[in-house]
Image (cartoon, rainbow, N blue to C red; front, side):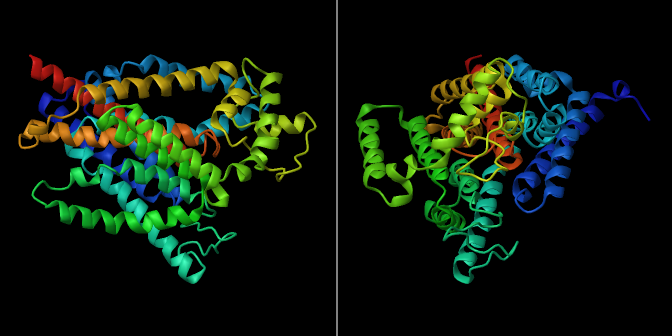
Length: 428
């Protein structure tokens, strides 16, 4: 076998481009099929990682992570999560939690970086998300008619739709995928009239929106509402003229809206009354390093606590920030929040500064910039929704949820790198 360093530049370049296409293909298969098969999820995640490493080996200087300004913080966060496993009260539990969250989670950020800076590949991304939302939506519509989900045979649970999931957390999946696919009309061929684009979007989005509503996932409602607001703010900027009416509308919805999203119902939630106070108590027991990743249940059991409002197998406090505090301590919490917060702030500034000009649509360069900006803006908006939803939902390390978050983060950051480089090239 010929060593890599002996390959001709032409062969190295062709293999590098093939590796980038391989990353994209594996990445999109993972996103599209992860609700259906854990085996496909694992295989696609490992394949994306393999193609990524091949690309790094062929052309290490072209790796997108080299241009990302917060790469050191990303590396420090992952290194700390690994070291934290060995300080855990249950090291094997923590190592298994991290093992599942690496290639179907944290490392998807690197794959997203590579795809995000390539308009040719990036244009497929909203289609993948829209198709994912569509088939989950159709599944939910079918379930609402027949009472049974056609893929897994899951019945409607307490009047709430489940889609192809085993429970109603499909609402959170749809909130993120609908938000991140907002750029779909802008990646369609420019020759298509707006009416045709709107019709296709309606076909893909309406079943998903139906299932999203009737899954009745409150954290999903928060996610999509924040994401839509963020998408608008990226385009128009922040102004009290629309922020104040929006806040008033949100208050009225909480105060007088239907029962499931009312303030009274929220105050009776067991998360506020039991899981969050317990998580805070666990944090105070180990404030610096925490109890170890994935050890929420083990920690409260070691304290002799018996849950009264929840089943004893609850594995997380339904708040990713509190989970980070009690499982990884102040250090893990700070590293994660700094990485996510600084990346989002950097993305906001880049996207606001590099909004495509109104007259750039007809030029090839301007068209590419417009496509990248729209996709990156939609992903930034979905991440804003994720950051808000994370206060109320799921374990941070739930694979499909982490995969979506770090995929969108990578796509957004890769798109911003493309826009910044394009701006530099225009100035020179």
